[in-house]
Image: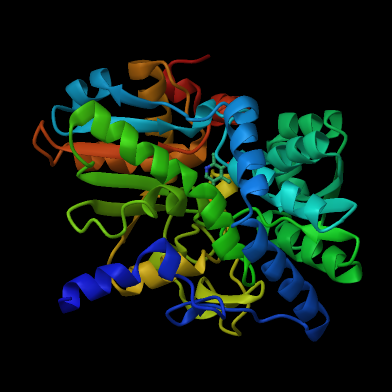
Length: 412
Ligand SMILES: *Cc1c(COP(=O)(O)O)cnc(C)c1O
């Protein structure tokens, strides 16, 4: 084996993380001693069920008949033509039941909770997508569900709040700090610490202590496995480029993980640079953060002078997190994935562009990936391809977008 092959093999899903949950120096488990045995229990249960044919079959049936998988891959002919460069394809995670990729890991986590004999599943939510997906999975599997959500996000994403309540979940408002995603994670963690025996904390992304970054990645990796086959069938080759937005990084790693060893596939993760790159006005963790600890794991983190997580603020609630999944930190350091930024205005422009060229309204989060892909496409030859993970649909965002940007785009 050459050194290069060695390096690529190390990136394989089955070789990451190591047995202590580390991706290089990132990840691990930095938690209060009281949680140690609980995390150990979750890890052991997960390592068992992921090989259990009954579990694999149960999840496969739900993915197909409940979520509607496989999600299609779609060629954006009009948009590609208008840009006049590379060919843009979308992996349509927006078409999943509940409208985003998060249902993929929520079904897995809910089945795991049931298997562990838990009564209740709890979580934080930013845009409300994780909360809705988890409330959906809890209703399906027969578990109680508490969702912690910042008051700012509750106001911004109100339709999702009502959805969770209709599904039988309890939405717990979080009113301290910036009242967004980071505070919601803090509150959910605290609630979990108070009763880790009857509850399972279902983290909303590839973040948190081991085994969550691994587990959530594995549940999301169905995106990449499907897409790899689909795009080859459509174009006769692997995609030349992959693009996905990165909040915690679950939709991105879900797509990327099937292609990490294909060195000819260029991979781009897109973070939000918000209204500016000034402190507190973006969530570009991998571009501007430094290694540190957050929510029980080591990763790049946006931090203040004392090492506390910095405030973040962008138009995409689902990307507003001052940390990032540890595997992304590793993939940045080994230079396998390029991490780029897109600002609020560029994302909104892509939101309208995809809606009007293709008849697909993307989530504001996903619009960041679309915006970067549009820039990239302009630099490519026409026979080159870009596969975007369209992580979610934009229905949840329409009121916010029209109120704040409608005029600019001809909506009175
Ligand atoms: C939550 C969310 C994201 C961000 O989460 P990741 O873990 O980074 O994928 C992106 N897109 C949509 C539609 C979301 O709901």
